[in-house]
Length: 179
Ligand code: FES
Picture (cartoon, rainbow, N blue to C red):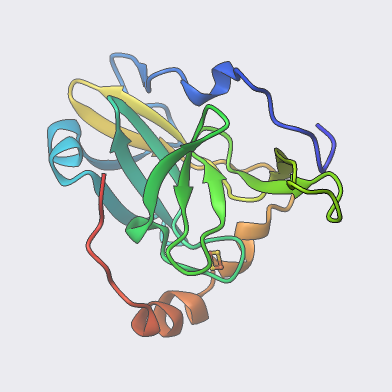
């Protein structure tokens, strides 16, 4: 995908497949919690493998997992609203309202064709994958996360450090999470 590819009008990617189910957890996976507890809470944050803070959320019957801190400036995504843009479900960062697709971690923005035209015509476009998305597997009512260990750098990686884990989160406002 190009770095600024226009998003599809009727993208099927807004409905990701449910977490895969099997009889035993994948070898490199990490227990997140009981599915019923995650569904009840709506959102759960957890440090996985001693090194990665992830957000697991339940929305419209689907579970999703991504890096907790926003790729833009480290905003706490667990407090973001979920909205649909151009047919794609996104979490909206509570800090500067960046929109991140739940299924792929793409940053979406509204591009303007011609800033001098009246009225303005805008289109939703993708900046490409900005937030690292992780895989979830459900086994006997338990949910496990397998970290996305792609060697390709993703912008949200920047905020997976001890500094952001301790300092930044202390300073963030904590609005009530909405579904
Ligand atoms: S920190 Fe998320 S939009 Fe700026």
